[in-house]
Image (cartoon, rainbow, N blue to C red; front, side):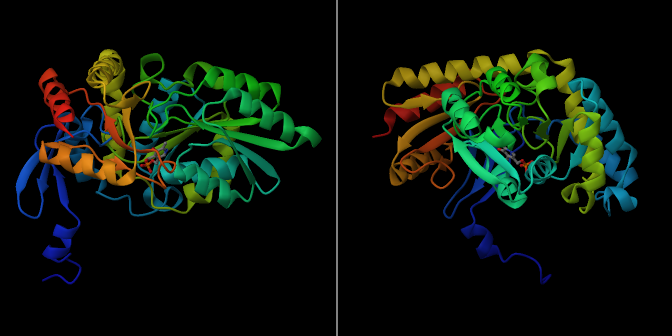
Length: 380
Ligand SMILES: Cc1ncc(COP(=O)(O)O)c(C=O)c1O
């Protein structure tokens, strides 16, 4: 046996989940059974990770460019596909500069490093993603949190900390990954202008779906935003990420960003897959709106059961259960009913706010919804 191979019993303990042939199914190899679950938990909103065109684009590129890039962008890792994806994103988003990163986590750390240092005060939404917290801490800046999506609290903090001409960076997500809530981006940009501070918006979950033709919720306000971060690991069904901004920010990142300079460049196949996904998203204007209609129907039907508090403004819905054990018990019950609906618990969400997080998919038909609602009704 290859000494790096994971022993079989270890895999079992980790619960092997692999994608089935259909875009919303997971094949599940549990301890005592082999079954297929409907996937209500991953962020492959349009099922593009299973799209044949996209897989073919990735495959063809890997045959000519290699699977991995083999080096950083500045050594020998740059490929024409990287430049092509960057320039297509620039055009699509109407941005001067787009730079690719191997992951959104890394991109967020780079974005904060470019906009903040130990003399900066970062004022961030209470519910930002862990990568943004890690990036804020790594920058050496002082980190202050404001109440989730609360403009009054944000303004209180801005007026308090903007005395003495402090350098301030505000960090928000456009669609929050666990709440499914939409940030009031326009009003946030107005406050940032009023208090003369910088703004970073993470569009990870909105990109491809929300905003004008899926360009993200911050797209109409680009002039007032310093950096936008996006990932290909969600609606794009690929992997990797990017930062977008003006020419000056682009140059600063190229010249000084260690998370950009000192890492193996994004796999050419993933870049090719992301580019093909971008074409699909651009050419199918209804993808996002159709997904939102599906989500609206799911929210209404689940609320109609009368037993569950459902939150979420777009394609991420959460059933707030509160207690951790109860959340796990519902997850287990749903699994037995054929659904992969993973419970999210602290520290990922605040204590007492454990939940079943549901991510909507273009492929969800009325039958899936009907069966899911029946399962929720049957749960005692
Ligand atoms: C809001 C948000 N930002 C950034 C990331 C990180 O993106 P990636 O998975 O590409 O590292 C995630 C992924 O979970 C996310 O939810």
